[in-house]
Length: 295
Image (cartoon, rainbow, N blue to C red):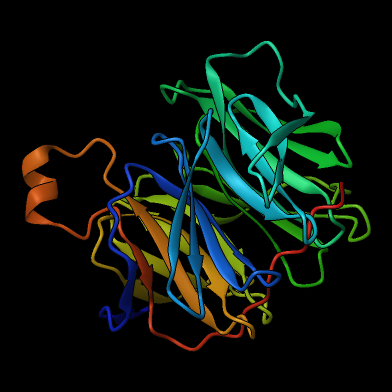
């Protein structure tokens, strides 16, 4: 039986994101980063001081990952870019889906090997327009295509299992990986079948125990599943369109979640001022931080 937990956390940032996504904690700067995709912004929150910085971007970025003390990686509708932390300058690293201006990047995560899994989707969420790619030091390998809204890319703590979902289909897929490369070495199978259920399976992360934490778009919640697919807990958040969770803090023992107010009418947003905000769930978790991308 699934345990339901009312929201007992705090608001990390009340700024209403049109489409808040791709949160990542950077232990180098002790900061939480996330993207406002449609607003073309990179948001940075210093965990120790609470100082908030917003970096304007020239494109719609959806994923941010650390490389080293001087550089970050951004995935966008114009390709993968290396960002200079000090200046904000951007340098093209890989045009991973050339010739598709109608698409943009969506969900993604760095595997323990240092390779990036990055997904795409149509800017109007066209059916089957997207794909998922593996990028290692700029070398691009297509893994899956005919995906509408790719999400929930995450990896087991040993790097030997990968997960993803097409939110329009709502079936979380699981597949074996080579832990040294992050490339598949077997077929994908359905782990969690939520087809026809309310709310869409959105962004996800895996903790140190192999549990999968999944944001539930449309239900205002973060769900926790066992590695065998059992629904263990639902943690409610005061934003209907939860998008992606992230472990943060020096011990990766806290859990944050981004949200969105995309597609909601003005009256709904006015009545719910925390829609689009970024939250700390206020719970203790056994999390792990994503690896750095190896450029």
